[in-house]
Length: 169
Ligand code: HEC
Image 1 (cartoon, protein in one colour):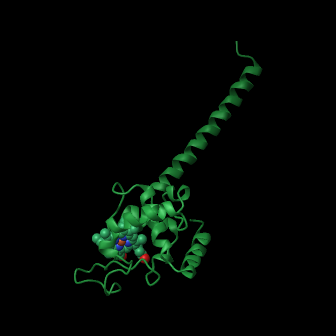
Image 2 (cartoon, protein in one colour):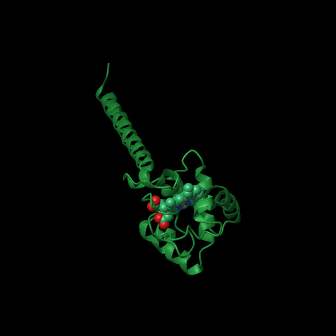
């Protein structure tokens, strides 16, 4: 026999389940957002330009994967502001003279991981490869830490302000 007390217990259990379900939905929602480009790994792995381990790893990754286009000294390709005959843009510099530092860390991470088209959601033809599956999240964060370590103090501070404004770091 189910008494009144039991019913109360069942409904209390029921609301606990409901709470769990809502919790799960929030997690699934967060996961969905992460796939949409707002990858969460950048929140757990900070692209810290003062970390010697990250910067050393990032320097190796940069030399291997990025220098051929963005330049050994992060100088970018010549005339990088002008579209090439095929309509695509040359690789911009990653040093102070470029606009990499105009973006917060999360944007840089997503751009590198997913590529320009997937990140913007637009049908943009770009020579910039997507590194998802080619580099681990840690390697991507490391390469960003290396790039940031090459900025002047002033540029670093300005990009930190952009991070603070967007809540991404
Ligand atoms: C085959 C050439 C090529 C390689 C290799 C390459 N990139 Fe790029 N990258 C580009 C081009 C071209 C753009 C300009 C994107 C556009 O608008 O088409 C770009 C843009 C970017 C941007 C956006 C910069 C901004 O100011 O908007 C980031 C960040 C970036 N690359 C990071 C990297 C990293 C990190 C690597 C190495 C892991 C890398 N790229 C390797 C060609 C390359």
